[in-house]
Image 1 (cartoon, helix red, strand yellow):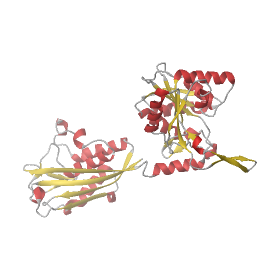
Image 2 (spheres, helix red, strand yellow):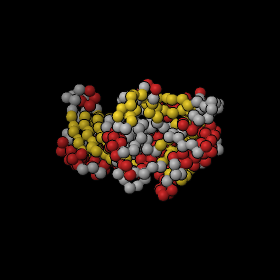
Image 3 (cartoon, helix red, strand yellow):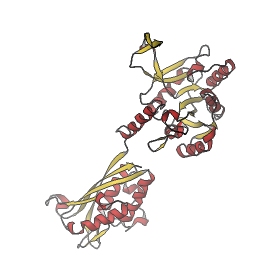
Image 4 (cartoon, one colour):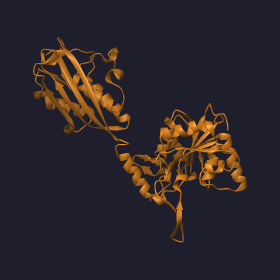
Length: 394
């Protein structure tokens, strides 16, 4: 075994296969799963994993240019090479190995047809490689496994001695290179990458816990299962955010709520126009897509935001949400104020917010309540606002 205390990991994503069994007349890696090509899921997860240094994508010759574009889009920092595959899977793996960066000493070979590979599985195979020559993730069989002969049962196989093998399968680079060279010389064709390493005398391949969700998409039923997974709570497409803001009253300022001037003898104190309604909604939207808060993006220490219209800031936040790939579903806000009365201006406020957020007006809710004289807002010291926002992955 090699000393693998310092890993320089390259993921080889093998993106071969046709989409015929899925009912598509195009390469399987390009079949759309939910909102992106199948291969994009593997590219993205290895791009984001901190232990992976580089990515080599092996694709079909007929869609190589498209593969390059997808690689740049979904793995912009780590994509090291995009190379054409071979006739058999092992030929494609060889092409990937030949394109490995010089610094690479650990190889993780993964099937692009397994879109739900997770960080924990990648962590387990990389950690286990410190103590062996290769590692495969696997899941135990839960059904009875039988042999069959001419359509009849020929006895059972002890399922405790078997696993369902998954990818990524990880190896020390030199060992995988030797194993592939040996197999080519002996004209051996295995069913997975570990089968080549196991043929080298004295080499050991460890098994670590896989993930039932890390299944290979082969049939149309597999694709339907994947679509259902992406639509359920495990892979949420809807996200909710909450926002709150409060400002005290002051003299000499206009009272602005939702971009509307409310006639009143007091205004709200703040660096911007102190529009608590826009601020609360803005924070709710930022929170829904995990972009921090209003003060992070529009700090009151920045002179460019002094007196700025908060309805304009809300437009910028709408753009930020869109850049994260989300569409706003609806917003709901409750203004807490004793005086002035908000009802006469409610529809104008809703229209302002509707325009700023580019939402139909029936998806913008604005309510007002009092605290019946209790607390600072009940005593007329200022205004507070609570807001909720729902966004949908586009």
